[in-house]
Image (tube, rainbow, N blue to C red):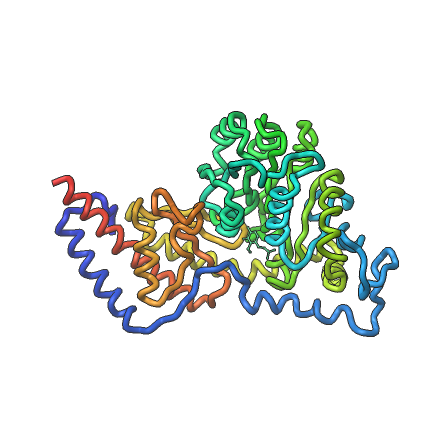
Length: 432
Ligand code: PMP
């Protein structure tokens, strides 16, 4: 089939009638397929089952500093866990704070501390300022945006380019507006585009002049080891760059093992300067006596070192790469020559981001739902759930089986085609 925009009204109507016939047959099948959330599949979770056996009741449960991990203590984590994550995030172990089971929890609490106490000793709490704003490179991660909504932080959309956020816009906004206090970044294999920030973007973020002295980068490096190819993307270290350009305290880095071991039962981690962490630890000490050290011990003894972790992530890739390939080949087969959609081919991460013609995404998602395929809600990848062009759809291929995914993609591609034909027919009717 050829470029839809070049077809005549009668050709389009004929295609529409054929496609609707196929859609009706799917509707009758009573399917229930879910491509909505980025969850690991059971097979991926099985890869870490061995971790449950590495600490047993009779094993030595002391951390490397002699602390009994069954007892209270260790506010910022056991030394070997800090060393392990320091190697992954390329910072010093002194710049690591190990949290509980979730990095989102750490991000939420970091925003909340800034709202109530300020980002550093002596800084005005953000909650005392009448209006504050965050820059939100979009499409982005919906739960970052929900944190902003919860604290009534106004979100400013910044477009994502192929190498990260549009830095001309970011630099201009932060230089002019003191109420802009932060930016959300998923710098590697971004959610949902799968883009990795270029060295230039990292440097510009680290270097830029900000009107607000307490501006912070929320650097959510959730997918830092989640490669899909033998030739992984490289991300420049932001903390090193911030130090180099004289803004050492500008960045809070986050990551977790949620999609490495067990989602929801992994380890969340944060990295920043010792100065930032010492302030944060003071406040956290009111909140907890310390995180789960047994889980830290279990993780570190299971992985041992970064090389083992690499091997483990290769096994994840072996399971999920065929699913990404399936999604991409369906998009290619069904949509590529019709000029009605485009997408990114990620080298890692958890998502494929599909852009339809403007004004089609909501309709596609609702049509797919009626045929039994659940997708992430259209608009969810933008602040306030509002995609200004109503075109972005996030595909999460990891959880369904390959067979389920194949069917779900057939239906999604069908819905994209039907909706696009309708859109093109509408615009042709307006032209006449
Ligand atoms: N950040 C990003 C970019 C995510 O996609 C997710 C969801 N998996 C999270 C954070 C949540 O991570 P955690 O389970 O550590 O809270």
